[in-house]
Image 1 (cartoon, rainbow, N blue to C red):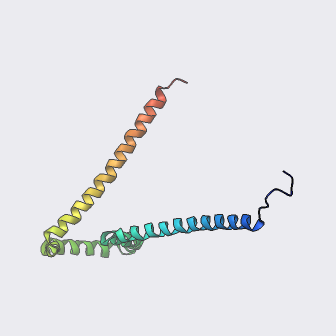
Image 2 (image 1 turned 120 degrees about the horizontal axis):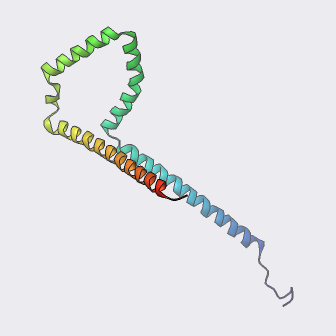
Image 3 (image 1 turned 180 degrees about the horizontal axis):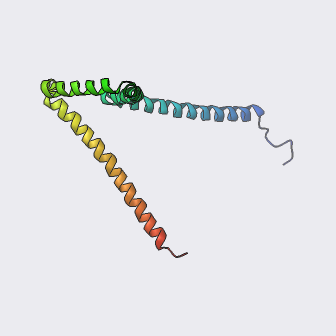
Length: 137
């Protein structure tokens, strides 16, 4: 075959192939970004009132420390009064037994799962340390 018999590949086709490849890569990137955004939205929706209370509590800790340092006697007196009110008034009765039991069960489950995962990590680490020390050099 000589050069006259070879079919010519138009340069427009190569440019179109590159453009479609770039578009496909851009589409995949956009799709991954959208998936991540949906995951974040779902994670935010799973946060319920207790999650928000935890966030507020973490934000309030520095303010509470500052208040206790500035006014230790007033803080101690206020804590004693709140304690007396809670013992006498029993405000948790207004919540209802099922709500309180659900909150306590959730906290107990979260605590047991976190401590269980720490136990497993500790066991794995100790097993790795034993196997590493038993190996000949």
